[in-house]
Image (cartoon, rainbow, N blue to C red; front, side, top):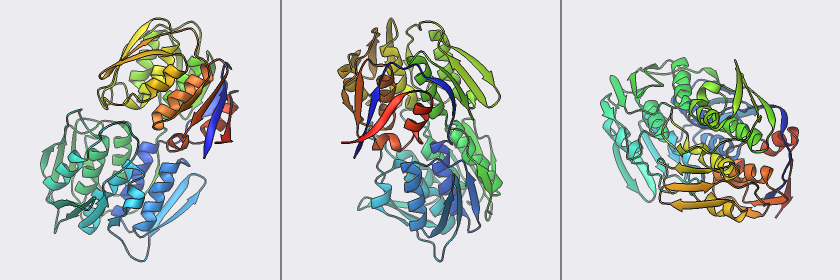
Length: 420
């Protein structure tokens, strides 16, 4: 098992290209189950999670070819409707094969999912939406077993305790595209990744309106055909790199970056005193003066993303003043607090809130990653800290950031891998 070692204190400078969005690519790959025709997906990042999804597609009977970020999916000899525990348990997003399997084959047996240890992440909204479309559902032996002689469109409300769900919206949308009649999803997730999936489905022949708003309308069609699609850029990777520039007092130009997908993040950083230069397809961020502490509340899109909370906490830990970070999506997503405090940060958790008292400088220390975004937050802290930081369990990082150490090295960071 590898660990990351970082010698902090280097100002990052240069250009970096943002990879394709993991959270777009995974459901888009799952959507290829809806057709027997060839589908070509471009901009697929080389990640542990994408590898898991490709493995799952092969287990479900698809032929999959990969060539430098381009994935071609074609029909195999026989379709399989069972998504095995050994695969699904390693990645929560793989549960989104439930909708397309049920839509295409009218039956599915999908293991309940695994993923990061960031608190309770139930699949109740997925099951609610699928059941409302007319499927018979039961949970048995750790699997969701679904079948339907036909799916029928319906008007449904898909909001949950913490708001909308991206994966539930994806799952229900993929099941509904082949249902009879019209489906209306109220309180649908509005994230750019949901929009990207909808655009791919439309290319396949689906009839979808309202994606990107809280109400999505889907008119079912009899069959879908193959399509080619390029995934959007990863807004969370872009946001992480922006914070890497600011926490190291650096100067970075991000290419393949849609700044419109980062509205809440950029707004908070501008409130803190950061300055940006926006151009079509790129974003330039340069540290020019000390930042001010700001308060953050995570919310469904277009609010501040929960996937940027840990990284923002790292920045606030070395920003003068006191900030309050409130987590409204996953209230238990604070496992990185103890690790940042090991590096000298002054952070106190109070329920769903973290009170961060900014200090002048962090100090390098051995730390342990608990989940994907906590890993990124610790990398940022290590880049800014005095001395050497060692981050264990970086397999979490490999789930969501493509070649992150190489990208940071290109920007001047002193970061490398070592065996544990």
